[in-house]
Image (cartoon, rainbow, N blue to C red; front, side):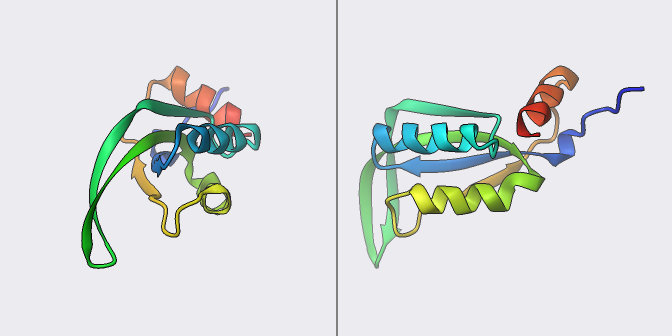
Length: 112
């Protein structure tokens, strides 16, 4: 009997990068190491407005949407921090409330 994949274990991680080259480097590394099943790279820059060291800053960044699970989060975080050029890179984790059975199964298979 097949076990039902649990969407509750799935996570989407947001990471922004300063260049599309850095985004590609991080995406490829985490997928090759099975820390992520898939990474979407928003290749059109997003405009970020944020507070940094007491000043409001604006930057063009490239957004990564990383699909993983709870077991891989700490290792994924370490690898993103190791490869990232920012002092304090964005690493936001959102739970997945629902995924189709087939997609969740594929995602978990890619991580094993």
